[in-house]
Length: 168
Ligand code: 4NP
Image 1 (cartoon, rainbow, N blue to C red):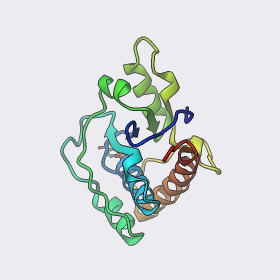
Image 2: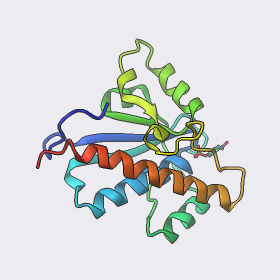
Image 3: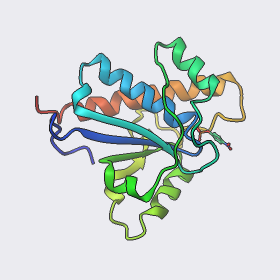
Image 4: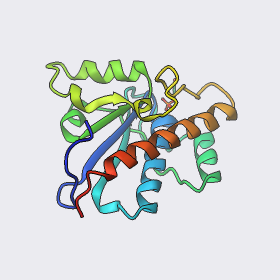
């Protein structure tokens, strides 16, 4: 899954996916971009996020997600969009936040051509729990902080793996 050579000419394209594209996947996009910036690896990555639903199209990230991220020095700048079948072709890696997102993404892959690109975010978490980044939408700040912590750990490990494939 993370085995191709990454160059400036052929940057690695990652899309983080949740349900609404306003809480979990914008947090993942923002953290991953932040880590890429810290390591000076901007030319090697194209980073995006999307939602499997159309509920919040065009909206900025949830204010609680933005507040938690901001406290940790991460700015969330995404606008919600819906994940499309075209994204299956477009991206090198598609990371689902939970099993329902994974199922909905796989349903768009009607000929099962892209299964090697699609996986759970928490497959990169050293403490993966049940594999899901829990949906924080209807809960309090604790849930948003938990999402931030889980996604940060996962993104750090993911970037550690991908960095080994960069050819400068
Ligand atoms: P997200 O959170 O999938 O992490 O962006 C949610 C946002 C909105 C809804 C559910 C989850 N909603 O039901 O509107």
